[in-house]
Length: 393
Image (cartoon, rainbow, N blue to C red; front, side, top):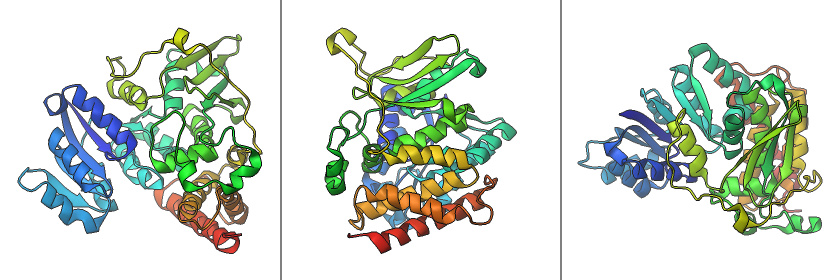
């Protein structure tokens, strides 16, 4: 019986993973070491009971009592707080899903790699903020990273048996998010509610808004560079409203291999869960004849400046990824709180990058977690400062 842990169990990625585990035998087929979540204590407890987890952890210490009460008499351990989440990553699971949103997912993910485990990586920020550290740790300990982002899972599958040296280009697709067909001038007035609706994917609010701003694709471009080691000039983005082709690999002989599938994260999660085998998954099968056509267009970096910022960050190297990510998370917080407009998020991130580029150590890629988190905090402060000066215009 394989052992698994899910970090971020009550988020959209965690819910999909839970569904897959339950549909493939649940507690009778899987030994669940740890489940972690946030404020949805009732759901975390429900999952832990259903899967008979060894331990359940909430990120919020003030909710530990609620979690203990919800699991009273079950024999399931309960803890709380960021340090407890990292400690749970030390449990010797065969497979650990990193589904925590934001930089908070980096410390437990890194702990899994330090013990040489298999990390199914759905957390975009891990490679963006600390690509050199993360990939170096995996190489040193013999840990395995399996990509769970739909785009990177698709690339991983397209490259199966191929030599990366023969790759001419990697293309990742983007739906364009909620505002892909809006007039450019209307974006200034886009509301949180409008940005929180995705045309194709069922995701959490933060990543849905990141899709609308294209910051999620910005992070994915950087992830592609870090994970697959390909020159940034060979990473392409294509707007594909139907979200059926998730990525495409073009070889130097002119041939391209594309990965197609329904917009359902259970495919990428299930592929990583059962890798290197392919298992039957409860996901929709494609009917291209019924679909009729697929459409594509080039991205507009005036509409989506986050794509330009990703290129600039890759060119800068050093701590630029950690700064981009920290500033992006702060800018999103400020947009959600009504302090800045939708289009201000990219402005705040660019300002933070400009402010910190000349700081000592910026040109050096962080090689330890403390340094990554220091840059993260500096970036958040810089972005918050921009919001304080320019918000509410």
